[in-house]
Image (cartoon, rainbow, N blue to C red; front, side):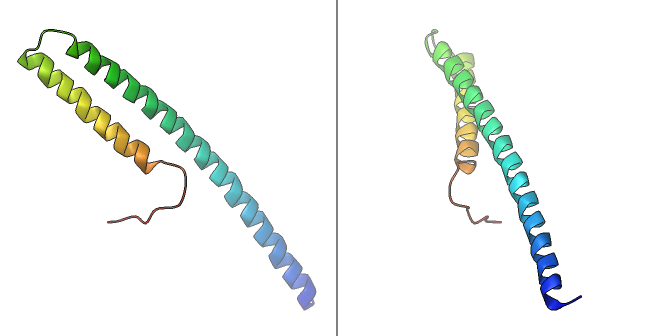
Length: 93
């Protein structure tokens, strides 16, 4: 084989690899989109339950349950921030 044929073979291999990476990126983006939708739904649910509990006469149980929903909302907000589309982030150990 001459050098041109070898280079053409390498280029074809690179093109296939790039196509596979793009397909994987599209699948990953769809999975992240679905995850974000589920997180947003869960956040709305917790926010609604927290608001409903706030309309009841306060007692220790209701206050504790409201705080549990608030904590869950905070965790969901952190997950949403971590899955925000845009520039890649540096991972910190």
